Length: 250
Image (cartoon, rainbow, N blue to C red; front, side, top):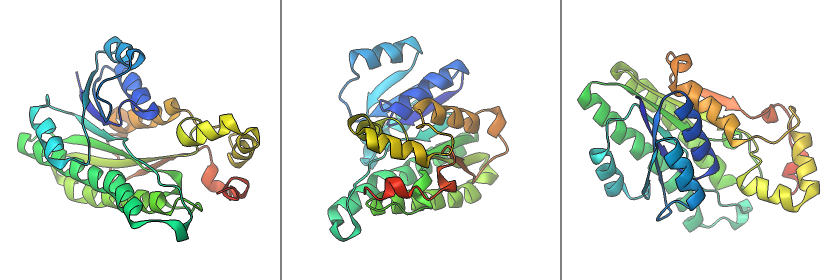
């Protein structure tokens, strides 16, 4: 059975990806910051034969040790990330560095370390990193997040080029406005915000974590075997329009 490591595994996208991959016969090793999964999360993890381990992706020694002790992996999926919403003039260097450390540096280190182990084993492997539709489209108030995700996309392309001779594929997926997490919570609190989001998405609905999981499953599965260095945009068409009704609130 193929095995995948999923960072941010207890979050909406991470958990949905684990469930989706299980349908294709994958075993998922989930890592996140919580000391332990909630009862509901633990039930889900057990139901699909997954595992959960607390791991701080910014602790490079712990990440390396985890990979050393892990069963052989076929895929690494980097979902863990944070945002630091603030106008450009109010951005702090502490916040900026934190966003880059988690969204970019941690994923770079994870990709590098996984690749080294695959090369040593002569096995090949697949990496999928989650970026965002705003990695190529500015959104006021998200300069650190947007910049870090843009850098992540370019890092992945560089890694894809250098690792291709070893049979290692590196791709990114760029989701749109998720109906969960920060955007989802505000939409629940503010019907007007929800309406504006809906009008900014040509497909007419917010994205689900399951939507993103389908894209990730494609990239690590048979359909994506000839893809590397690609950026799979799954945003409901959001990048086709300005989204000014949403952006004006930032």
